[in-house]
Image (cartoon, rainbow, N blue to C red; front, side, top):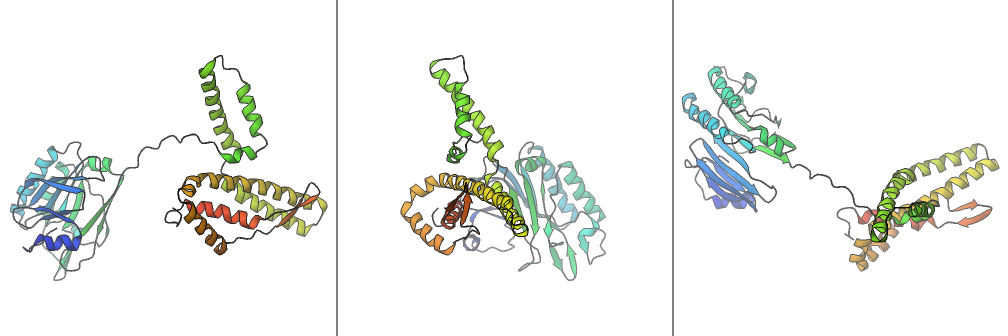
Length: 370
């Protein structure tokens, strides 16, 4: 922040809802941080305030250099030298340097002025190259400063290679100028995702509805292990776990996608029957619907099991939520009765469908039963 004034920093802390962490000796650079973060000043100079930022959001600290450069080329030279000096200490440490550099890097960074800035541009470019800094790019306003018909990009952020390794992405946005001839710069960094862990084995209740489940378990359990006692039991359990995971992927796959595909199959079978109402096409409808109901019950088992812990944690509230939800979200299936094996079976699928959607909603963020 570049205040160019000397009011009480507490006033700005309240407005920004951030803690004031210090300023440089000239009073032209101020630093604020959120609750739970701290900025430790390491160097306090006229043109740069250097320090390290720690936060509960990050495992390690990062280095930040806030710049407010002089306007004169000769006076800027100490800043470029200081940048080079800081960079030698930043090997392996994420480092961001940014602020008002009061110069440009290319002719495209300036409109409305014919001043020859070539020498300044070279000085700045050489300092960036020597420090091995990278420009992450930006979106938003093309120029960060405007006055009397002149527009320039004087403010920017630069990062080192360690910074690009510490964060998955850095997005820089040049915000509109509001109460100053300079526009603020917003940097947003994406933290790296934690390494994915191998998912734990979990028995799925829906498996027992499949005709091949019991035989699969029996076949695995009957295989000899060459061991006895607890080692024999451990080996059989390990084999069962491996076989069931493979069987689940092969037979069930994505049960939700399978259910949707089955619905499309029923619709196609119905269309075929309407076009050619033969007993064969009627039987095909019945077969598809029977398979659909079985798969539907399996999906209901899946969602019921997945939501069980949350359901038990607050049963009364979930019960009330479910009653209201069913009244508001009743979903009627197209088929209410089918003929299977020569006998009519009345299926009350309306509430079953609502139950599945309800269990899905329990896992969504912000639901009343969470």
